[in-house]
Length: 228
View 1: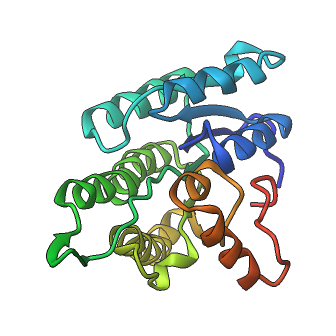
View 2: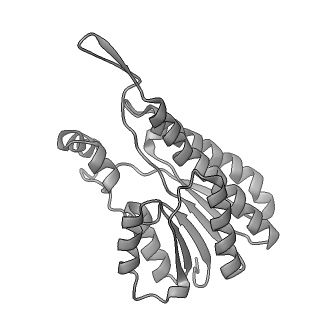
């Protein structure tokens, strides 16, 4: 696929899989809109991309769960380049915890705020960005591509009630959108990574749990973000 001159938005583009993808897309000649709510990661990424012309990479520090900001971001990117060829829905958060646990005779229930925050980031944000980007694609008759990054946790994983639920929903959206948007020549595909060497698993799991996951993999190691 020739990506030279293509205009692509990637959410969660400043860290892990997102940053690796941003580098690869720029190397391939694409113009990129990097969306991330971590301003420190955005700044670090921006410094690492200083060799590229400023007119080829754009940085948007927003929370993808805020619909008005999503609309504004898509409109800004579209106005700058005149079309949008691709969207990579990659941003996600992980709030691990059991549905119910008992400690010293007292119940502890999974946090409602963690549930709401995960749904907002991992599901609503995908819907918001895709809806707005697809409108631009259809308007310009762009035969674009939508990539939804899911997870093997979509099949269910102990201690990941909210994360697994959102990733299962993302898989359903991917199939639904692929069927709907084919009429317009827009392709929709999903990627479900296994455990990947990013900040997300390292910040949410201790060394023992990480090793248990690694043992389960066929290659006996975590994936490199560049491989994704």
